[in-house]
Picture (tube, rainbow, N blue to C red):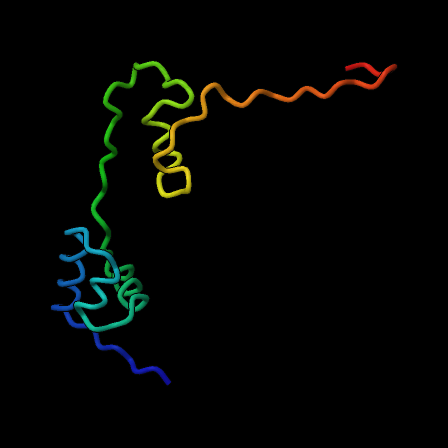
Length: 106
């Protein structure tokens, strides 16, 4: 049978403060000495919410789209893969067109 946790006002205040500062549930659980799920459930019950994150707008929303293979987009796509640091294959690989058999439309 699990042990019933006794929550105090001091613990609740600590959870609210840490969550308002942007702490993760893992670090909050470690600070109060409980499991992650116990900390999450208690935080939900006392209304401890994470601070609202403001979305950072793009530097220039009116700029044109970057072309295929641009170093910024290609780097973002390949980061952490086997292709990281390789150049974009330009020109792109040609499409292979299969020859139609006699009497069939291509």
